[in-house]
Length: 205
Image (cartoon, rainbow, N blue to C red; front, side, top):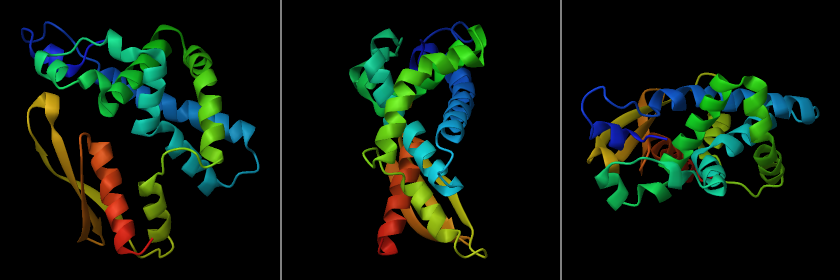
């Protein structure tokens, strides 16, 4: 498995990284989780299904799956990322897990990826439903905003500072084009979650 920091240290176009696989894996994961929830939890309303899915496929959860599989030890990483303990970082591990699911899907098929994921997925869903998983601030904020159909919510990446192996992302939330809160994180997803949490705090939630 190849992190972009490793590929960037090689000759141009000599080594491919996992980023394209991560893109595909994200969609495959979402579909597998959605189908599982739809099939096994037929009494849960759409809003609850979305909450559970968000809790299962968020960065922290996927990084947990990656740790159980020991994926960090199989990553090829650049020197800078290695020095900054990139193998332990949630964002990198979550991306590696998405890439793995995509590879299984391409090499086998949807059923192969689904069969591999099931042992991890079942326990994660049970934990999410019992309220033991990472809280999804973006979903919670979206549900509050959707109560007023005239309100619109959007996220904008403000900055991504630092070297490739140690970037810090900053995201701004807009409500009806008005900035309401900012968040920072080591990945764009984490920054969005932190911005949503800050917005919820401003709302007294």
